Image 1 (cartoon, rainbow over the protein chains, first blue to last red):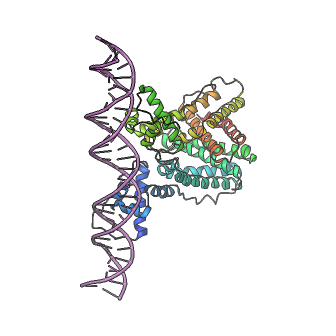
Image 2 (image 1 turned 60 degrees about the vertical axis):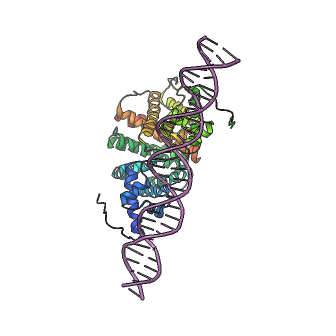
Image 3 (image 1 turned 180 degrees about the vertical axis):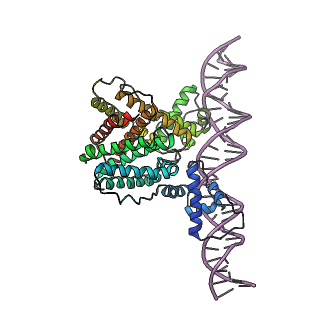
Length: 199
Length: 199
DNA sequence: CGGCTTGTTGACACAGTGTCAACAAGCGCC
DNA sequence: GGCGCTTGTTGACACTGTGTCAACAAGCCG
């Protein structure tokens, strides 16, 4: 927590902005949106409150950047999936998803459930974009075209299932990873076989 | 919108409380949590702002009552499901769910996604209770025991799928009701047949 | 060592929340 | 009908949090 009570120091804009953003990510991740004031962020960064507004404009804009950071996911390694049969590929994508979400558990799950303010138009847009990305990854991993409205919508639905199931595992602890894995692969195969053909 | 600018009128506590609550339900449903002030609610009810605090204590407590109202669902008619075979019962429960959620579309979907502040402990608890109720209904309709941790957790996951899928239908309009119906019944049957046995 | 750019600060105005003593609507009693 | 009492209702007050902005000074350049 080294609070560096030294004299005021002059940093390059990018460095200062980054420093404040990191503090905000930590605080918003721990408590909610409402329970963190811009003053808390400023104090955490050892900086005047006005500077937060100077760099991010508004508390909500700062929060938008924060959830953008939280929802940004490596996304790598997924493209090079083994070109095996469908059940194997489904298994791989589910494992990958569970790895990612368990590594970032608090921040990712917290952010995807809106970490403090769903219903807000801008926040919803950012979250929707993250879900879109995840849906794209599911579709490509399964070997289906990313375009096509209904298909993509169904993939988003599946991401919703994956999210709520992961929450049962990581936050409530009422499911084991094995059970989650089984649930997500079985439903994914069902959707690919029986439901997607309608789209 | 009759704003009854008449003299101050004295109402029975229950009546006044109810009146304020209805205004709050409408306002919180339209805009979010943050975009509605207690002053807005008071003005909408033609009442002094202090009276809102008198009846509900805090803005957050008022909001808790609001989402409790929004999430309260007839729940009737479901118990008397035809004792048919599993696919038929799954069909019935899905139809019932889609009817309910489409009737209350804005308020229910808005509230279940936390209408303005997920991450808050108390709000999350109320929402979790509503999901529990829905999970109970799914389990009983399918003819499985309501108790048993893992089973119930999986039912909650399914409710998460149902919610996100309904949102694709009602809010984004990228799925038809028939597609949603097909998706939800197929996945429900898969879960009952292949996944629930693990619990 | 000046001077200048600009990162940084602190004070200001304002909006929203919760509290509380004081007010008055309307019922019951005579 | 008038009077008083209960209690629903009000408006002012103190406080916290947000956004703005002119003034300040850190640190480079000559």
